[in-house]
Length: 165
Ligand SMILES: [Zn+2]
Ligand SMILES: [Zn+2]
Image 1 (cartoon, rainbow, N blue to C red):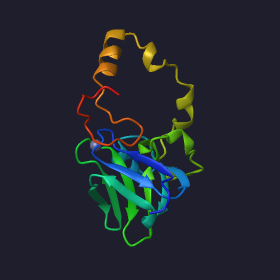
Image 2 (image 1 turned 90 degrees about the horizontal axis):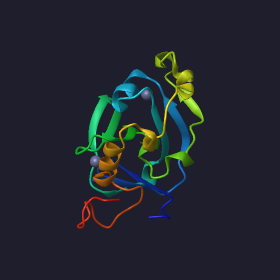
Image 3 (image 1 turned 180 degrees about the vertical axis):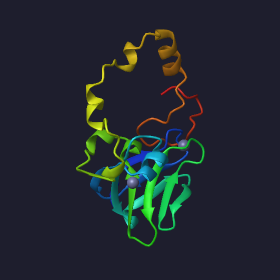
């Protein structure tokens, strides 16, 4: 296949994928189905032609949220990964599952009828970084026992030497 442009995968590392073309139409969808599927206020998605999407490890589990729509996720850890309208020649991936999500800024929003009314106020919330949380012991324990796959492809997972990133 052509050059790998972008890579991504689920939290546990059982499913990894590559996009062989720069994805287009980056957007967030506020519709109620996307809220449920992502367990969040919106779904961030960007798409490529089907033949530019390659699963490089594992398999997608599929939930058909409506007859036309397949939502792919990791059966092991539950990370939402793909959105595909059956019969259409494109597939979208969740921007948060990409290894470099900050590179893909959404340019549109859909499903605005279900957008939470305080969406625009979220960035003004008070808060700290993870390292500024008030339980440094817990923060250190999480860091030392991190089971999350790193943000790059790996030869094997989980690694033979253990989970430390
Ligand atoms: Zn997983
Ligand atoms: Zn939606």
